[in-house]
Length: 113
Length: 114
Image 1: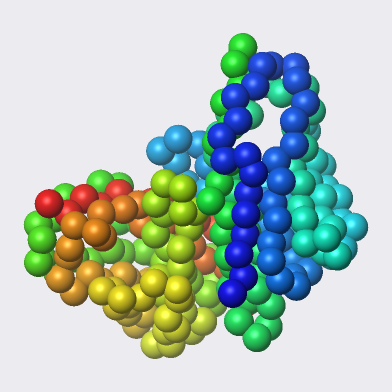
Image 2: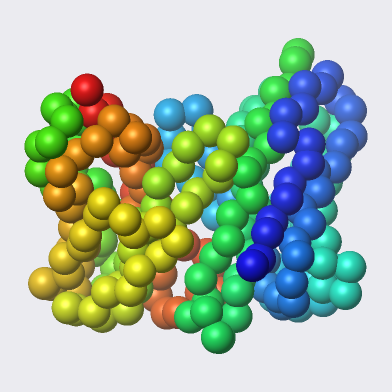
């Protein structure tokens, strides 16, 4: 059974600091998604990582994928208050499972001014 | 702009009621999904559909059924609502089985069963 573990589950940090959210998964996969969810809102797609070594950046967020280590990271650089949200990773289970996604529990990020 | 619309943001229903949650997408997407979201558990897949009249069980289908009579509409049905079905329900769609762009989600329906 595929398990997806995010850590930390909760993170409170000061503006201007850097931090990394980790997404570990327990079986082979070559595709991973990162989403953002604001309180009371739906999920917004941030990154789709399509292969080993993939790195994508948007503003202060950078995501990477290491399929050999079964690990993805979401790095936040010089955090600003607007990045406060819950971040989810989701792992593609591949063709045998009709490409279903298995989701992490989410990381609630609070950035204090 | 791509849209997935869920008919209700908030619903309160009584135990034993039959509940319908509606989802409509305007993107001509093949695939549609129903998830429930609970704190600390992430999203769990209830059912999905790859085509009209097609449905597949997800991880937690018990107590739910679905209907997809038209490509743009995917309905989730709680046959006899129970308090443990109190949750946030999210509908999503993708253009193909393995999306290059990620799923597009609706705004969610927060269901309370009393």
